[in-house]
Amino acid sequence: SRAKDVTMPAKLPVNFFSTRSPVIDLFRGQLDYAEHLRQDSEIALYFFYAPWCGQSVAAREEIERVASRLSDQVLFVAINCWWNQGKCRKQKHFFYFPVIHLYHRSFGPIEYKGPMSAVYIEKFVRRVMTPLLYISSRSKLLDFLSNYEPGVLGYFEFNASPQPPGYLTFFTSALHSLKKDYLGTIRFGVITDKRVAEEVSLVHSGSVYLHRHVNTSLIYPNDTMNYTAENICKWALENREMLIRWLRPHGGKSLLLNNELKKGPALLIFIPYNPLAEIQPLLDEITKVALEYHSCNKSQAAEPDLQHLGDSDSPAFDSSVPDAHMKLAETFSITKYPCCNTVVLPQWHSISRTHNVCELCINQTLGVKPNRVNVPHCNFFEIETALDSFYLQERTFFQVVSNTIECSNFLSFYSPFSYYTACCRTVDRRFLSFISSEKTIFQTPKVAFSSHGKKDKGDNQTSIPHIEDRNCFIPDLHSSGTNITGLSCRTNKTLNLYLLDSNLFWIYAERLGAPRSTHLKEFAAIVDLKEELHYVLDQNQSLMGSTLENFIKNFSILYSPLKRHLVDGTSVSLRAERVITEVTSSTFRDVVLSSAK
Image (tube, rainbow, N blue to C red; front, side, top):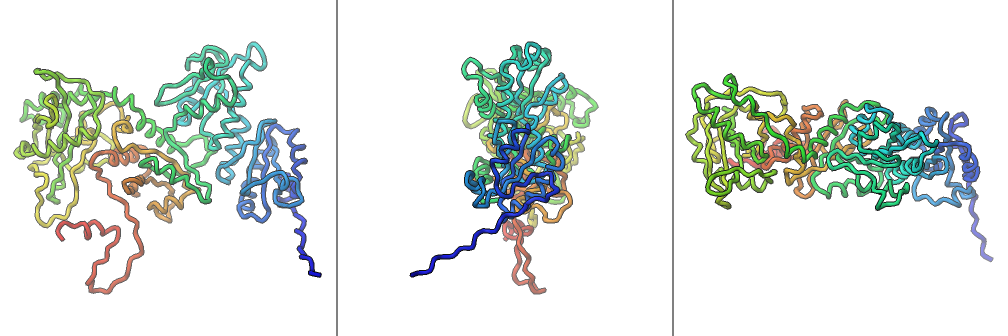
């Protein structure tokens, strides 16, 4: 007869964690004993592992680090879920290891899906420990509402009973949000003081408030939705406001980046992030930019400060031109309607380094007598049409003296009730830089205007005409808000903003053009899959609010001055006599796109 197959039985499992570790190691998969231990603890963390799994081995040290800090408040249990004789293997069917489950008393399991890093795990455990923040004063309320993450507030009067009606439901809804949103982007707070609650229009005990920065904040509709933990969590998740999103790829095959980049142009910002740090100054700056970028209602109400246009000592005016004050005030009074842009015409002579600057406005009138009509804002199609008309009428501005401001009106081709206004002067090149956010002073060099399209021989400059931000050239037209305010609603190139932790995902930054060896891991890039565009923030500039604003503005304007980032390969060593010119990413524009050859 045929011999039977002989298989060697698996070796008995051994300890995965040290016997001195604060983590209880159930290496034989005793899931029933783990449930017994959990009955005596308010917070419990289960770490399901496979002894052969490299990721389980790597996460073991991170779990021990968290346990050494929180073992007095949290029960840490590690369970071998691979041994075929253990109850864990028979009852649980995991597709990957390790798996972390958290329990808050009887509520759970709450699966942790974030990075296997001690600081991230500890932050999540602390959120499970205290899912609600106690808002006891007006200052704490302001701190809570000023955070960039969405906030849900519940008002409960604890005077009547130890547990006011609806409080446990609200508490459970906070745990539900952690279960559905492992990034923990929604914060839950509870108010017990009636005067503090009135600050956010909460009057009745048990009412719930969702705070939003840009859109109108909401109060939970008790009349149309049942007051349950699942409904409150669902309502908050559906109506939350995401100004900026964290991306945390898990390291395996994933469509996370692809799905986000398909939505449109994306600004990816890499910063070193510590979730446990109490203050995050760089993150605060970035979120402030994101808030301004999305604040569309503010942009329509903003008006420039024109009070000092009549100041005779203003350096923007030449005393030899007495009518300049009147002309500029008349022309730029239209800028209170956000329908003006600054047109920069390139100076083809490379020595002078100056640009001709014209303020181009769309002015709409009705009837025979010109009357201004308040247009809420104009899109870039209108500006592009105005720009085309401006170039066709450009001969009007050839003879302009460089140290005066000349204005001219010309009709639209498409409407008898629309005309465009352009005021031109020559501005020193150094005032065109977006780097400095300080207020500059006009110094007018006596350089004559250069006609667009006429190029001197031997000049390889490849600048193109583009529309720049008004305040960079006309410092006296300084508005109270930043120029980026509401820009997401005023452009067809709206950016989605994303954050990535450079301590974990710097390899993505390197693929996007960041240097491999750098002590400061800060980087920003814009990726537009549809247009196949890729821009990188200048590495010589530090990553801060003002540089990000300028980066976004330069991308958003019609003729963007940003240069596409090109990936460079290794240079080929050629002979001394260079018969064939080698093209690299740094020389590509000069060699391949040269108009002289």
